[in-house]
View 1: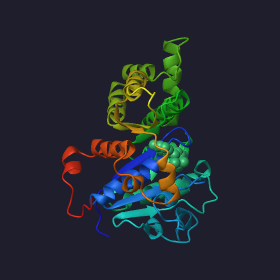
View 2 (view 1 turned 135 degrees about the horizontal axis):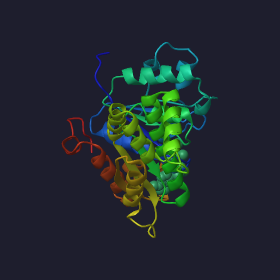
View 3 (view 1 turned 90 degrees about the horizontal axis):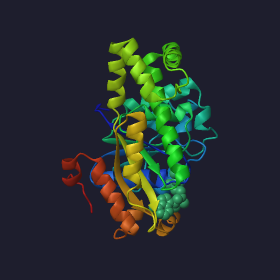
View 4 (view 1 turned 90 degrees about the vertical axis):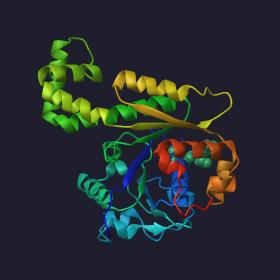
Length: 312
Ligand SMILES: Nc1ncnc2c1ncn2[C@@H]1O[C@H](COP(=O)(O)OP(=O)(O)O)[C@@H](O)[C@H]1O
Ligand SMILES: [Mg+2]
């Protein structure tokens, strides 16, 4: 296959049930409808359900065929969905949990994903802050985080982003250097918590300005996106902006709130019918919100100038 650079969007959140798979399926649907060749990969091993959401009740192949070496390439596990342009690598039939994926298996998947050639590749990462989930986030600068507007979900999302942040510092510094940096930060600032990112970056800049700059640059290149899902009438519309401020203040990471998605009981109906919600209920607030998120995620001219194959 001719190789081109795919846009890879990992989609995650700190907690199950916030709507990651629903959002991944809906975004995939919109991208495909606008003519983009889109691949969804269900990496929520152990709780995979993306296949149901995109109308493939019994996927004939799954990512486990690749992990267990029944096929030679990840590409061979791709299945079609009822929508042209929308493809799926299912996580169904896995008796694996992503947290237990061996390092080599994970690296093999990451390398293979990077080689696939689609316009967009969306990774449904599932819940949790295990190393493996975090590493799937590191594959791209554009991580999308989904949370419900509840304190518990928001705490989880903060924890998840913080883990991505520290993983990046580890990656840049390598483990022993990270330990040395944390020790030095503690020595210089007795009583301060070494998990304070600001402090780590400041001490890094003092110890090794060159590396300090590299680290700032790496962390500054993340373009995290935030989506609030399942908003009800009484919820404040400003929670998203507030979370982004907290992330910027405490982790010095850029995060953009790309939209709020209203709660709608009919999401359940759409999933039960294995139909895209947007197609079944196009004029609901939730469908409008999903389209708004889509527009905010794509570079402006691409979202508004659909290609020839647009159906809607
Ligand atoms: N905006 C929404 N309004 C109503 N129900 C929703 C909404 N988003 C998700 N749900 C419901 O929440 C449940 C969990 O969604 P899912 O996408 O499977 O979550 P996750 O992948 O984060 O575990 C599903 O039953 C789905 O019907
Ligand atoms: Mg899910």
